[in-house]
Amino acid sequence: MTFNTIFEFLRDLQKNNHKDWMDENRNRYHDCRNFVIDWGNETMVKIGKVDSEFKAIPGKKALNRINNNLMFHPEKPVYKDHFGVEMNLSGGPSGFYVQIGLSHNFVGGGIWAPSKDQIEKMRGAIDYDGEKLKEIVSSKKFNSTFGELSRDDALKTSPKNYDKEHVHIDLLRLKRYACQVSITQDDITSDDFQEKLVEYYEILKPLGRYINRAVNF
Image (cartoon, rainbow, N blue to C red; front, side, top):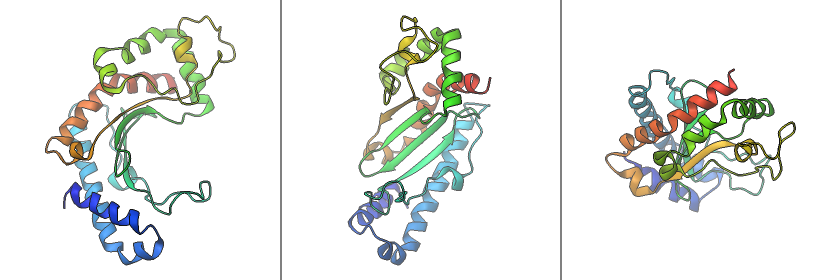
């Protein structure tokens, strides 16, 4: 099996997005699922070789459910059009995520949905040594690969207890400390895809270290 087989399955699922079809194709789904799990495990072994602090998530736990949560999003189809693999970054709350599918393929890192407590700890760290985080996310390699940290839901004013003229107000306003880079199906099916992911991980590693230190403080 290859990733081309995965894309073929997802295209068929997209055309037949209902439980009856999935039940009829359950063996096919499990073959694809097992392939992605094995691939994820192999990728995490490669990442572990470049980061002694990396703590791999066992494959089955790393793979996101293919079912959409219809209780909160009843407008969505029953099944997703992708497989998502969450890999732990440096043994802390900061993550390393790969999404492989039809509509949006990407590699992401950081902490996407921090709790209120985690946001406060991040702001405390930024207040203390925000220049370090600024240095990480403005480095040439990080910036040319991932751009800037996500500004989704960022505050338009200063957070409580922080001056609007704070030297790092742009970072203090963030509510997500995460970034991503889009990849293509050609990237995913290429022979060096795993090696490329290791490179992405190494670029994200300083961000992960900063987040984990701040949140675990």
